[in-house]
Amino acid sequence: MPAITPLQLRLARTALRLGVRELAQAAEVSPATIMRFESERTGMQTGTLARVEAALAARGVIFVPAEPGGSATIRVREDPA
Picture 1: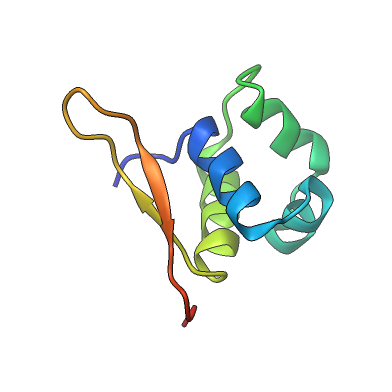
Picture 2: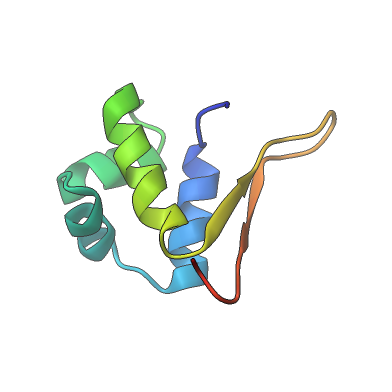
């Protein structure tokens, strides 16, 4: 599965109305890690990115990979599992 993108992370946080600190706490990473990734200043280690993705998926976010000529995006389940 391709890694999530900074844009997808921003979209997910916005859709969930989730602050940087709230996401960082849920994913057990520093807020600075989230901010640096979202601003595309740095990448994120695989394990860290997996924790962030899992925290968002637990809240109903589905990451949709880019199709040819398109951008990666997200969807949010109405009733998260």
